[in-house]
Length: 154
Image (cartoon, rainbow, N blue to C red; front, side, top):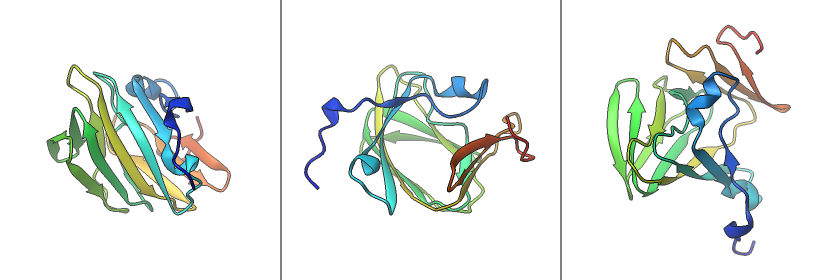
């Protein structure tokens, strides 16, 4: 596959969460590099967070490993058990099935850019660890669906 031309690609903005949880991702944009390149074994997103934006709510993945590689700026990796400042060149990994929620937050005054790399499991459940977030995201052959933690649809 030839070099990808990103200047002509319109990023996805926000997130697929139902209201009111979607407001958390205002200022987040992603370009699906893996999708653009036709990859099917793993996904790669070029993610940008404006000041004050978050990548997601704290969550963990049942079936998919994830890696975050910081390219520009300074973000805070927020996990259930603490916070870590992340700068260009820093890497964080999240093993599938480990029930520790994570998210990236931009608390700085400039844009943050990082790569997200994840395996592409046929079925996946993203569980949210904040007790105030009544949400889970479920992936099947039909795509992603948001449900309440008890499985009831939104």
